[in-house]
Length: 181
Image (tube, rainbow, N blue to C red; front, side):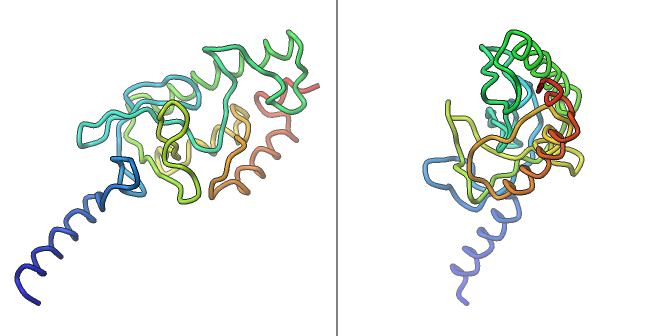
């Protein structure tokens, strides 16, 4: 192997070990996962992160949807919750609790932002779509298990697992599922 090929291989190895393999279509994010610090919580399913390279990004948690706190609530998105003032009020309360939970668990924390091979890298409003891993636990999945969120209708690798987790929360009337009557 000549020196030029050896040098190129060394550069590729260096970038791979740093989590920077190369740009993906139209996106500056390149690794399947990246370490970051949560610098802000927008609501229960959206956070702002700072990557080690100084890049700030808004991340929409993949596969989950918490009740809105910054817009009108559509109870129809949460199966079994009545589209009444009482249903919407109950959901709004759980949306606020989901935001508080996100602040408690994520604000200022070091996390891993993990991308999914089956999902788009970016969603609406140009936000990254990803799993957020904190203390070796998927925060996305925890939102479902604790009844702070519903399964979001999109394609992603963890969909079957997330559906089972949501179903268990629904059957137990956990969190927002207590709003169903």
